[in-house]
Image (cartoon, rainbow, N blue to C red):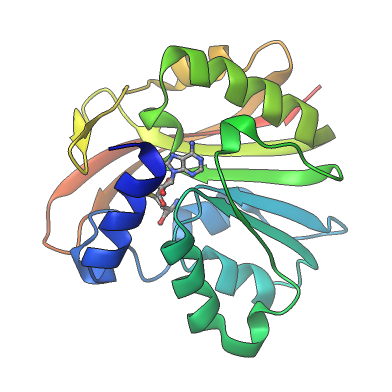
Length: 200
Ligand SMILES: C[S@@+](CC[C@H](N)C(=O)[O-])C[C@H]1O[C@@H](n2cnc3c(N)ncnc32)[C@H](O)[C@@H]1O
């Protein structure tokens, strides 16, 4: 099954509480994205139906873009946001083959990069480098070396802080990292590596 159909089938067949990655409050993402403080534009890649966007609206980000392969996931997020969805840019597509129409201050990715093949990782770095403006931040959370080897039936690549950071160098340099243990809705612990990288 090709990736768009694969992911869309998951969102069509499961409730949020049945998705291992779902979380009520994306607290690590919010901490690492940080206060808006003069910044305006943020992109959440592989956003799914994450509640991060709800908080970004609350925090006053006025240019928010969500990209995901799954139209169903983005529709669910939009339905939840109701009239607050107006003004959010929703893009159904592959982040590795996307081109931004304007530069972004922040790029956020939770639990997407670890699915990518070697060739897609190269494309991803190119897209991120072309999208995030100088001084802007890349916030990425991926499974840690002690995290799961699979998610949703797909193999993942697990990353240490250094392993994740070096993929994005020299275009981005690390400014912060954090270890998180996410608990799935059914109580299983999943270790994540988070890095914040600054566009040079
Ligand atoms: C594990 S989920 C994480 C969703 C969300 N980031 C969160 O934290 O709730 C992975 C998401 O990445 C999306 N995805 C996977 N590969 C993608 C790609 N190449 N481009 C865009 N989205 C992708 C899937 O459709 C899915 O919504």
